[in-house]
Image 1: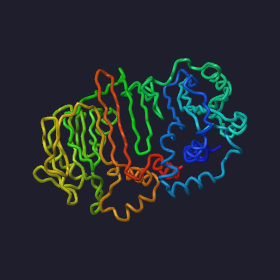
Image 2 (image 1 turned 135 degrees about the vertical axis):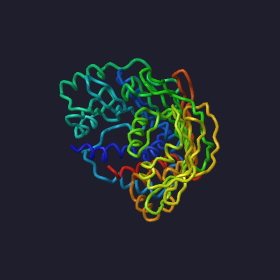
Image 3 (image 1 turned 30 degrees about the horizontal axis):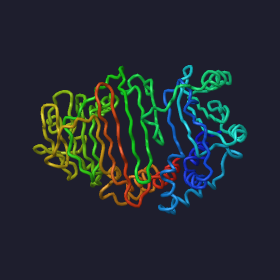
Image 4 (image 1 turned 180 degrees about the vertical axis):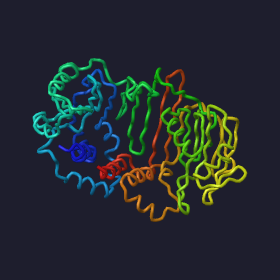
Amino acid sequence: MNIKNTFKKTILPIILLVFLWGIALLVQFTSEKSTLSLDTYVPKNYNFVAKIDAKAIFKETAFELLFEAKDELVLVGMNEKLSEPSDMNGKLGIDLLSEAFLFTVPFKGKIIKGVCVNLKNKTDFQKNSSSLTSDKVFTHVSGEKGYIFSSNEKISKKEITNFIETEIKDKPNKKELTPNNLSKSDIYIVTKENILGENTIFSSSQIGIKTLNDKIKLDGNLTKSKKALNAINNIDYKLKSNQSNFNFASGIIPLTFQDTLKYFSKKIGLTLPNIKSLSFNYEGLEMMESVMLPNMNMIIQFQEAISIDEFLHNELFLSKLEASSQENTILIEGKKYHFHQINSSTISIGIDKKVNYSKSNNLLEINGNLSSLFEIKNGGMFVSFLEGIPVFKAPKELFNASKEFNLVMEGKNNKYNLSGELNFKEGSFTMNEVTKFALEIQKIF
């Protein structure tokens, strides 16, 4: 079976069934029944797990989605998706009004990804989930729980049996999985064991997401890996935030980013030391005569000394940009970028002659207007073309519906706290906007 087609026809429609989940919740208020918690049925050797509590989400958002938003695009889109033919004959028998877990488990050199759900009808699941299976995908039923697994490599029947016996079958993880600080989250994510490799900055994390009718809240904590070579620095020079722009400041600069930046910098004649911290305010792109240029101000603090002359008097750099320099500015097709030496290792670059900055005790700050990320001034027909592409249109519409965004990370001694909030404009509702995003983005599959 074509996995890509299966994903489009099966997994994405499940996401889009949120509209029906809301209706079902309202109907079930008078006959609510408890469902089996899956906390103790995720394999104990997981290195990643995400929990989605559909019931909790729609207790917060169903009324607004169904009775206040009244979004015709959502209603029509949901009807079209639910009318599409499926590759499966019959239903999977999944209880959509309960918890679901997604997880990854390392197993004998392979990475097994899994989904665990409560079942309303395990006979339907056993019968119809077989159409999902392949030499990398297999399913399992244990009691009233259904599992769908996917291996990163081909997996034999013997290996499947061994995996089920050692990780799943009648051997639930007796240790409570949900950390206390995440118990009230509608969605939470837990990682451990340097899931992204030895150079992962954070060896473990616990992140919870709460959905409300007009906002999404995020809280969590992270632990720095003892193996990570990355330093985590305070932000000594943070630009003053402008809430109409997208503002970013970080003392966490991954080594992969540093290496990539050095590689491309050398291509244009620059030799740059590693970055200690970075701060920028971004207004969007502007279409010039033959190129799009960013409207932004930026402060870069390097780990070693650097002079703005590295940029201003570098003939190769200027020729690659088709730019000219005058005093402390670089001119590209009529747009001026001003350079300023703050100290021996810190410089500012931007469209404003003077920038305001201060020291921050945080390690990461992101805030402001997310719609700036998709702003293109004087874009004309090019913007119209982009707005017909789902991967551009979907996030742009979601961010245009948002009012403000804020994300902060703070801490010390390798222990860090993360908190954030995405607020939507008056008249825009969380689940309605997320559903529109899902309906649009699925078109790329």
